[in-house]
Length: 243
Ligand code: ZN
Image (cartoon, rainbow, N blue to C red; front, side):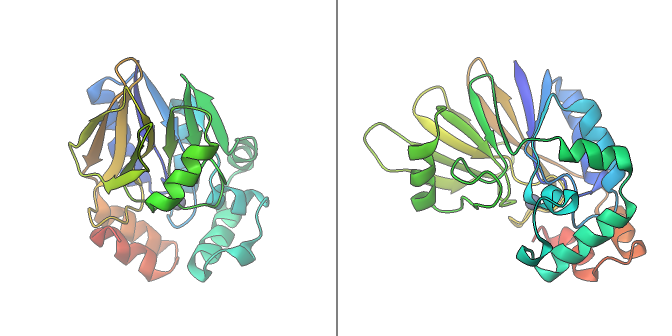
C-alpha cells in the first residue's frame, strides 16, 4: 500500500488542496495525517473538513488541542495563542467536535504515528540525534512517523550504532526496510526548512521505501487570507520564505 503522510497543515487551505491534488495524481491508497490541522492559518474549517474526508488516520497536534481546550494557551507563543483564540471564534461545532475526538498517537500497518515524538506525542520536538536515540529506546514499532518540527527529516538507527539524522529535500528517498527509522514529512502549511513549498512524504508499506515530496501552491493566496483575517502579519510573511 502507498500512503501519503501529511502533517502540520495549520489551516492553510491553499497548501492542503495542492497536496491533495498531488496525492491524487500519484495514486496513493491512503492518507495519514499527523496533526496540527489548525492554528496560524486562515481556513481551519475547510482544512478540518478536507482532512476528515480524505484521511484514514488522523492525530491531534498541540495546536489542535489548544483549540479544543485540552492544552492551556499560556504554554504557547504569543502569535500561536492569538491564532488559537481566533480559530476558536470561527471554528464550526462539528469541526471542533471532530478535532476533540482525535488521538495524539496511533499505529497503522505496524508503523507508529506521533504528532511530536514517541516519548511525548504532543509537545516534544525531535530535531537532534540525541533526542532521536531516546525516542528509539521508547518506540515499540520499527518505523515511526513524526511531525511538529515543520522540518522534513529522517533519523536512522542500526543495531550497533547511535542514531544519525539528516534534513530531507524534494525527491530524497530512503529504503527503510531494515534498521529503525523516525521520519518527518515536514509541514504542509508552514514549512520551516527554507523550502516554501508544501511538504509531505510517500511511504510504501510493503517495500518500506519512503520518498519526500514538495508541492507548489498559491502562497500569495494563503498569505492574503491570513491578512484578511487580521491574524499577525508575521504569519503571512513567513510563508514565502519557508521559515
Ligand atoms: Zn505544527
